[in-house]
Image (cartoon, rainbow, N blue to C red; front, side, top):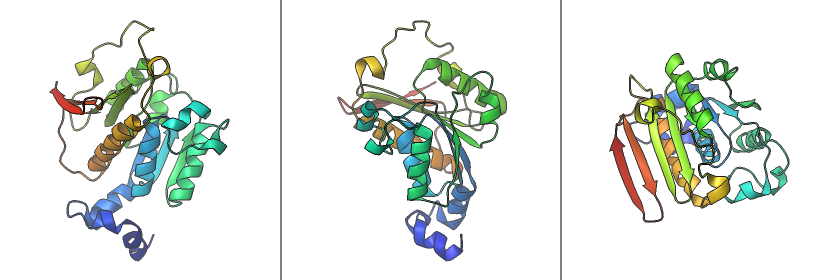
Length: 236
């Protein structure tokens, strides 16, 4: 893009003293992988594409279902029955055609996780199960990739940055995943549609701060309680 086109599109970010044109170019040169195009992944996709992230990878193996639409805001009624990755790609192309979208219609697992993650500078985990969360965390530690983490349930959420500039990772606060496979999740207890928008927006904000080298607080887990409107930070 020409400088005048960059300014015309992104001037509200460029006007921020801490970002400027240099920070915008960092955003445009970044390669970010979002794992999951569901409740958390969709607001992250939306805001990072709008911000002008140069390469946006999205990994998901599910199709859009009708019950997704209360919270997965980039999908719509016409998306039902098609893959979430294809729906995400259509959304991104309509929003910002300058973004290089890489669709990965695969489940991240032990066989492909490291290979996929190695291709990106920053990883954002919007997955909805413990196995994937720990697999992604461990791959990021091994490959020295920073990781933005989030989770949601009901009215509550969590956000953290792991493995960035020597900071701690998921296993430092939760050494092992729970053994109980019957733990409650969004399928059983539900989730208020606006909650993933709040948590996902926070994750996108942290990602943009990492990309633009803005100050960050490490080794902290932020707990979000939207029912009682309380936010708490736990150091670990």
